Length: 529
Image (cartoon, rainbow, N blue to C red; front, side, top):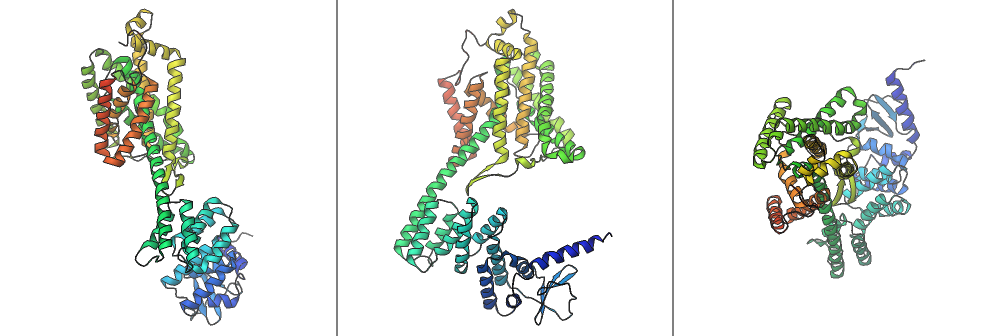
């Protein structure tokens, strides 16, 4: 026999509630919804002390305003279902059944009791959410016994740490001086930034009066502040490495093309832009034709962006740059014109507004090392991606025939030509390779911000600074320069702001180049021309 879907759902909800119907006695259920707030809160405390999670459905029904009462009868009204809360049976709702009224105080107490009971759930996530809810609520000494019990039973370190904070937040307000001293000391020794607010709240005009406890609180605050400063520095280093990874991806192509051909390619940023838009196109194709595999669209976007931008680079080299070798100023003006044309072409096709590229699920979120230090997953993957591209580039340059030709032409074009190397073909392939790597940088950039026609403009100057600082044509120099610029920029931004940090970095690079024109690394040989 096939039952209607709504009847099946009703039966399931009835069975679920019946399983919890006798978690509380009838008198307890009535006390929880009748009388003044003081009596009801007292009943809630007794329920919390029992640590019986089967009371949660009834408490949740009260919180959701699904409970009505008539005399000694209690009704749970859920959509079209009415259940007797004492017997667990389906019944008819009397016309004169009254609503249970909850003011804000009662709602807060009910929700806090539910959170306290959830501390004993079998699911770690439920316990973690419950502990966080208790930490955000006002500390209540009435829950101290329950929290201590949960803390002793807890096996997950994250949940245990939050429970410790909740307990200390209660004990720091204890009437016993020794308890307050111990709580202040424990909060400082844990060095968790989240404890700072708990301790600071005791230093106000209406806070701690005992000078010994005040001194301990201030000492603990200094300990926490010191640890927070360390985490802040670690966060700046990570952000600097992340920026350096993007600069490295942007500069790797220039490290080859500028060193090989002496071309000042002002359209290099637009290759990054094309790579980002290629990622946007692949994203939309997966949305429409492969929605089930959407989380893997990025794996298809990487080779697509590389080949599209490589082809565009080869076309630019064949049509424009081939006729301008040996004239760097003219290549600068020509590629600047090409960059303007590419930006206008993108505006015509995709519009002038920025477009959004979504992160796959596996790139969302982050790793929380501390309250003030979260490492975003998308930036972690970008750092790993930069390492992979760098390794692939090193393998190509040092282990392949094309790499041998590129190195030969870079060091001595005339001699390489005399030995039979087709320098024109090498130029085209190298320019395509550099453009393709810029496209990969665009893929990375699409994962940390919106994509627009002017995307690459903000990175072209920094890319040239990386190449010049590291040494023309040198991969190792590009790595050191990119990471150095990224980390130094982020530290200076924290001190002087973004604009002044850019100026300081540029001044540092100018001074360095004056002292060492060849950069950090330089080719060893008779000629670099």
